[in-house]
Image (cartoon, rainbow, N blue to C red):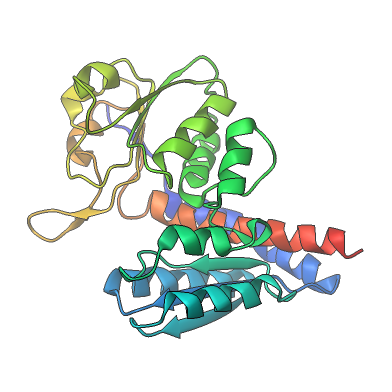
Amino acid sequence: MSAQLIDGNALSQQMRVDFSARTQSLISQGTTPGLAVILVGDNAASQVYVRNKVKACEQVGIRSVLEKYPENLSEADLLARVDKLNHDPSIHGILVQLPLPAHIDADKVTEAISATKDVDGFHVANAGALMTGLPCFWPCTPHGCMKMLESIGYDLKGKHAVVIGRSNIVGKPMALMLLQKNATVTICHSATADLKHHCLQADVIVAAVGKLNVLTADMVKPGAVVIDVGMNRDAAGKLCGDVDFEGIRQVASYITPVPGGVGPMTITMLLSNTLDSAQQSLSVNT
C-alpha cells in the first residue's frame, strides 16, 4: 500500500482560477480587492513568505500593498499604521507578518486590526465566532487543511481525528473546524501521555507542532489520512514536515507532502478571505 498524495500545489492552482474570475467580477462592480502586507525587520523566512503572498495576489488580480519597516519601528507607529489601514476603504485585508521584533506586542497588534479586515483569522472576534459556529474569517492554514480533505471527498462525520498541536494559529482552530464537520476530535500536545496510543485510534491525523518526525509509521493505523502542517529541515538541510513521510506513505491512504502540501493552501485561503472581505464591503456599500 502506498498513500495517494494530496497535492497542495495542484489544488491551489485549481482554486486560483476561480479566484481570478471572482476578482474580475468585483472589479467590474467597482471594487478592486486590496490586501495590505506589513513586514517589520529583515527575518529571512518572513521575507520569503511575504514575497509568496504578494506573488499570489498578483496571480489572481488582487491589489497588494507591501509595506516594509525597519526592525526598530516602534509599537506605537505600527499601531498607528494599522489604524490608518483600518479606515482605508481600498484595503480589504490587513496582514502583519509574524514574528514581530521582541519590543512589539504581537497580540496587541493582532487585536488592533479590524475584525472585518482580519484575513489571517487571528482576531479574538473571529476566533470566538469560529468557536460558536458563526460566520467569520477562518485561519488560513487549518482552513487549507479542510479544503484538502474536501478535495478527496473525505466525509468526516463520525471519524476520529487527532490534532497534534494546540496553537491558536493551527491546532485549536483545526480542532474546531473538524468538530463542525462532525468528527470526534482529540487534541494532543507536549504534555500528552502516550501520543502513539491516541494516534493509532485516528482516522485522520493533523500534525502541527514544528517538530521533526513527531509522527512515525508505527503510530499510524492502516488507511488513515495524514495532514502534515510542519515545516522543518532535516540533518541534510532538506525541507520536510513533522511526519516521517517515506515511512507513513506505506501505511496511510492519503498524505500531504512537504513542500507542496499545506503551504500553498495557506496562501490560497488568504486570497479567499481577502476576496470574501471585498465582497462584504461591496454589499455594505450598495
